[in-house]
Each structure stands twice: as structure tokens, then as C-alpha cells.
Image (cartoon, rainbow, N blue to C red; front, top):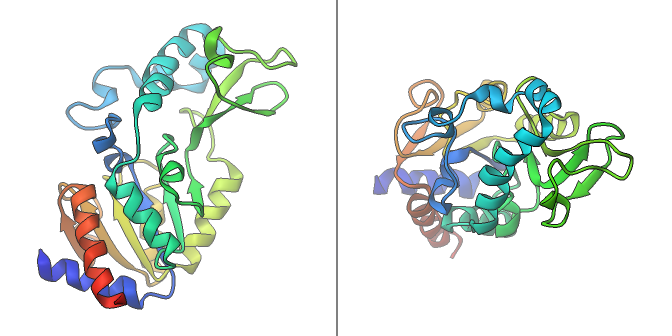
Length: 248
């Protein structure tokens, strides 16, 4: 493990354009449940409840669940060491960009700035009528469903089943994939389409792949060059320590 970590640090140190690609696993240590796995949300709730057609037909009922699962849970969650390591590496110029599938805003809170939020975020609400963005707060989501000034229903600015990836986020992620020569995968199984294709595309374009996961993923034996097995927080901190030796 130590030699793999040292080798991974060397790749990052010598990389021209390193990016990170993160999934739900990186936020699990912050108390945010994953969607898949033994204790994932899909074992407790029907995924159809998160379909856009269900939301538009039942906005009040949908919002009761959304408020409980996302806004109340996220309000109590804070970035963990894994988020902070990635932010520090960006601030030090060693990570150029970050693509996340997460909607929890923890990367931004930790200090990362060049982020492609592939599935949106819970900071904002979007009006289904006029498409205006409104910053989420306790007052706005106090009455369910929250309503825009135009009278339209407000929806969390996240991707529901049945919706397309936001064009802005998709383009930003693709530009990152086109530039990167090294991608660090953290906390994702590689099962969520189309986000799962991004590391594969980066690898096809010649990028090396470092993977940090608690267990092998669909990437591990296919595109991963270095697999660092362990919790994201401790593994990334060990990686940062090895990089600091190289940077002096």
C-alpha cells in the first residue's frame, strides 16, 4: 500500500493536468448516506419517488421526502478530511479540476472551486415554470411545496430520474476529461450512467487512473492503474503526505 501511495503521489506531482472524479463514497464519512449498497437509500425508498414525473404530479409529497433526506441531513453534515485534501491539492495547483456526482455541496464548503457538479446541487432551487434559480433557505422551504414569485413550483436544482444532465455541467466535465492526463477516482462504484463513462473516456484519451475506494469497483480491473483501497479520508491524507515529500 505504501509503495502504491508513493507511486500515485509521483504521478500527481509529474502530471500536467490532474482532475478528481468523486462519488457518494467520499461523503459517507460526513454522515451522508450513499444511494447504493447495503444501507443505501435505494434499499429504503423506491427510486420512482425521485422520478421527475412523480415530482411534477406530487410536488408536496415529494418535497416532504426531499426536505428530510437532503436539506435536513445536509444541513448537519460537514466536509471531511477527504474533501479538504482535494481542496488543498487544488489550491496548491496539483489538482486542476474536480467532477463530482454528489449534490451535497461539501466540495465547495471545503474550498474546491473549479467544480463540475454533474448531478446539480442542493444550494439552489429551480422554478419549473420560469427556470429562475433561487438560493435555498429555511424560509423558502418552510412551506411545501415552495413556490417561485411567478407561481411555478420550485424544485431542488438536482437531476431527477427522467431528466438530462445540465448542459453547462456536462460541457465543463467533458472539457476536463479532454484535458486531463491523470484522473483520481474517489468513492464511486462506476454504476451511474452517464457519469460512469467519464473516467472511461479519460482513460481512452490516454489518462492514467488512480482509484481510491473501500472495495473494488467496475473500474478497478478495467482502467485503474493504481488502486488505493481504504477510506477516502485516511487514504487521501496519506497520499497528500507523500506528495508533500516531493514538493518539499
